[in-house]
Amino acid sequence: MTALFSQARHSAEPVSFQLGWGQVTGLRWGASDGKVILALHGWLDNAHSFLPIAETFLASEFVNDYQLVALDWPGHGHSDHRPAGNYYPFLDYVFDAVQICEQQQWHKVAVLAHSMGAFVGNLWAGIEPERITHLVSIEAFGLLSSPESAILDDIRQGFRSRLKQQGKRRPHYPDMASAVAARAQAGDFSLELAEVLVERGIEQLAADDLRFRADGQLRTKSVMRLTPLQIRTILSEISSPFSLILGEHGHKDRLQIALAEWRQAVPQLNVIEVPGGHHVHMEQPKAVWRCFTALLAGQNG
Image (cartoon, rainbow, N blue to C red):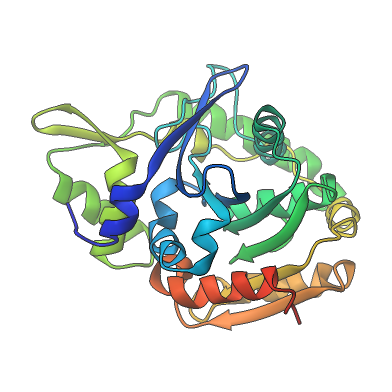
């Protein structure tokens, strides 16, 4: 196991939230009764995505007044898979977050979110603007959308992807090194950072048999997507301070298209570029944390 982020590893408090369909897990750092910062990871990642940020958080003055809670989304990390016959639409993730906040009586939360988690955070901040106090979106803005004319093609492709997934078996690996190499090949980061994610995302079935915990249904295509106008309507309701962090070598081209489509819907949006790739929050945690704390301090824009 890599020795990276040892303080965050040793001080992490496991948390779990029992919802109607199953259990959502995560990790917490800082003051258990402090103001809440919810960290929302990306597709096929897990709560360890925020170990680098947690290491920086623990060394900051915010540790006494805030709690940093990194969730494992359903179907990821140590969280339960959704029950058979269910899939993973973005709005269900939003509802999971709402249920957790209601259960914990978190009436106000700041959100620090990456990629898929940031898409969820964007939707959530528009749906519940009274709850979200600050939003930092890393490498994602708006949502994956389709025009109205694509509805039939989306449904057909979605159905085909579900049928295709039914016959698939999750890959198995003979050892940790093989699993880490596979994750690094699928990502944009070093073997060391890949290992950080794999540690929480792997399960050992036998001495020489490991597989990733993530639900295979996560790979199915959405049957229905919101239209650009629907997404604009949601984004326009966001009232919190809002920063978008772009990795210099991340998904910048795709993000520029999203910004051209929806930036005017969020006039307070502040766009910041940081050296790094799509997982810039793992590669440059101090820089990303500075952006987040600047937002908390009212220095957006």
